Length: 230
Image (tube, rainbow, N blue to C red; front, side, top):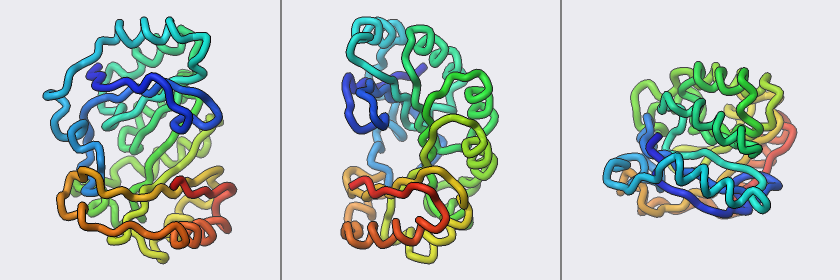
């Protein structure tokens, strides 16, 4: 497992839990607005933390840490992910997975095994804009299947989207709401032009808070709980 980072405590990554966040290197997307460019493009140049170190840390923090977040990059591109999560679960920690939904087979495996306690799945854009938003030609492969699996999983979940002005207009937001109709939760996240994969996005001016609030209102007829993460 290419573990490239550990945030020892977080109050925002796992809803209602003090969590430790584990970052895995590598991703099958090249989202032009992604701010984790080093983790996505050059994970081999980053130091690796061993599984043993991570597990030892978690054991030492069992009295304080209330959950573990596994993020990336994209965790599900790594075949060792289920075995690593199993070890974390054996320590007694609830696990939240952040994923782009492109490996529906692994996501289904993790759900069926009972390894996940919370799923945060990124929605990049309306379905027909996935190539542009994900940076790869077949970016939407498996995403629809993963959406269905997440919504029917019985696991707590949220869909979330980083809102980028050149990619996301009001009509796109409504289309996403129609696609995810009946979902429990959707989070609109503010775009921050910090070290994006595509340097052109450094000049992108983010929407004001009022615009994201307006988008949230457009989603509420379709989705049970919508929030803006500023």
